[in-house]
Length: 500
Image (cartoon, rainbow, N blue to C red; front, top):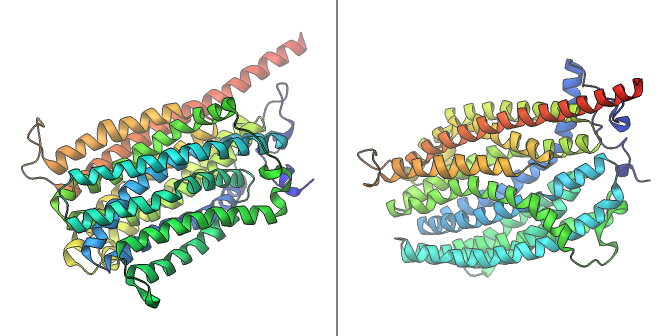
């Protein structure tokens, strides 16, 4: 049997996880520094390749914005608006496809490896349908730009950006299926290597197409779209190539046979994945829609918002990567029948994510001006971006808390309650408050004397993220307690029956 398919190669849920039963309760991890260090080490082994891969992916967006910004202010604004729509669609797709991760992780924890290929095949069928729907919706979303007060050049660049990059959405959906499959097998380095190569490819293509080097036409911001589209397809092709050649996937390789779509199986995946997709949409749209809402105040507001969003997205990748590793660790522990270890892994992961968020908050608060200046030569854009980065520093801890707790909860295959929390935090609290502060509409019973523009929306984001983080932390506490208590009750009943 290949090492990846043995419990010795999978970080165990606890020292007794493989033998847990109704008559043998799980043993709590030792409350010692050694146990804590061991869990941090196991968590980090999964998280750091994901982190580098995620940073490389976000780095492509950073490169797009930075290189478009050096082309012209109009190119930067157009790419920023196009990216606002693109990010919403891509992140929502990522959430829907995330259903694969906890399901595969549970099978791995339970050593039910024969069930993995079928699950991945059905998830790939789902990605074809969901990715195609996303392509259509992304193109329809460009109609929004026709109803916005924009410079004609900015509108054209934003629309073309969406038209071109939308071609990559089915490929992105399939890539995220294989991403979740690989991560649940504890294979995270392939995504890191491929993402780094894609970043290099993206920068090179941007250099060629944005600025018209090597005799190619100077496309400006539209060149970023072509580069991004090519890189998404490169990610999918590269990951399939890696998996096909690596023996780590041999025993669970999903492409060994043809299989028709199974409506029941795809329905089960959608039942788990759609709430995650809605959750991601609620959070991402709260950030991305700000660019659309402040567009009427001019290119400076849009560009400054995008700079602050890009850098805060970079720092967010660390707690997100930790959260994805926690999802796998928790799912494997629950699949092995050890809810005590699952609870321990959940809170260690949350502590790690919040700890880093505190560091990133200090960096953003102390060096906000230097960070903003690195993005643009425009003094007005840099000054506004610096003020937004300071506001972003304030919500770092609550952002790290909400992403790590929500990932841990998904490890329990619970997705609907987190969805409700995120919808409430961002669409009921954050966005309405942002409209009041940022736009100062006359219909609001109270509003500032003058619109606070982008700054008003970012203040509202602080409130929304705080609500989400607090509610999700409470939910995780409740879920972990209930699962441990349930096993304790079952064990008590079983022992009583034995004594009888």
